[in-house]
Image 1 (cartoon, helix red, strand yellow):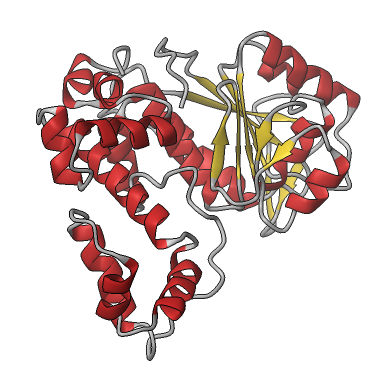
Image 2 (cartoon, rainbow, N blue to C red):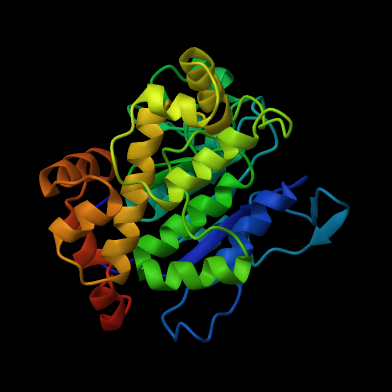
Length: 332
């Protein structure tokens, strides 16, 4: 997670194109384009930039007129590429030039799902880590070998360039940007209006192999819920398997299929999420947060927190805690 807390340019521009991916565009429009008077006058402004002349059609039979052409990108603080026409469709030279100019001018570039192919073709992802929908990941890797493709995450934040996996992961990335810009309190407000979880870690697996079968997964499902509620303690695999009424081998396999992670890694992620919540919403000491979140010692908390988020717990609280939120967006 970037540590620069300078308030960015609030102008958000979404690219639109013929046969536009409606859902991906809707993610950006809902998060950045909906008026939010409760936030105040510093909320985002939202516009659209057509990548080609003529009326724009979108999936679902929609037709609409954009705010303007590629000139709208000039002065934008954030440019969103909401999907793309296809992995085989090369962006025009004019679009590539406009995106490169926006990047050079300091704009953040954000892609949802297949929109990553536009930035890849523009050479803006070379030497960077990026993600896309799991079904496109291998194609992206083969065509653009200079990109470090990670198909197993919801989104990747590289600072000025951010990429997300398929469709709904775009909402996670958009909320992540709100969190960066305005802090946890405002991001949670937006999430509540969207009726979605306020935060899913970008490192979460984007594809779960199979859902939990109701007939066989009752105890495992209950165990997972219990561990989320009370992540303290250091249960062994043998103890967890016994609680789920499974052999150790079956438990490990079913746990990974259900959550996308090994039990130990998943429990660390749950504890980090609990610690984040406590740091954001309470004034507990770091030692108390470590105990309440299940890490036990502050040194263990600091190790896992920095490893997953790139920040110390204290720095995270300074940026996203209640005191930062009370000072307003500039402090967040």
